[in-house]
Image (cartoon, rainbow, N blue to C red):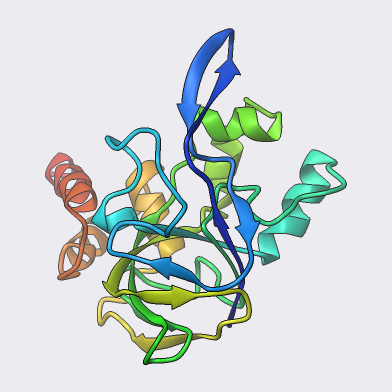
Length: 218
């Protein structure tokens, strides 16, 4: 498991449907070691704090293994790292392999970072506009190729080439793909929802969604 690229961008204004929209999705790879603080990477920013950023979404990971799938699906010849708005392009760690609450080490224990997996990424209209396929959002969601967000436990520096190590697995073992299904696609029975609610680090947003779904199931 490895970090292949660190990608950042400050918010800028783009035109979407003849309207000026502020977005930070145009991430670009940067060289060298980059400081990952509690809320973001140095040089990075989010446009809409109501849905992006914050302690539970300090950095966004996307598996490089999905790049070939989308390249073929969208008939695009070149997808540079950062295409999906991710801060960290990674390899060897898919949505079925990693669970909410899992602890990861990126880089070495002294200068690297310790992070916790928090939730899947839900795509927005800015992503569809960026890649030139505004109608792709539902397909992207249902593909399960969401990537995942991180909470920073120990700040430090990250760089392309850093090893990624799983330090601790959450005992409930609710993987990111399963979490995505429960969050946005009405998947999961009452027992699974109850198990997810036992994740001690569960984000307030997911806890609210799962509690509402559980109540609706009677």
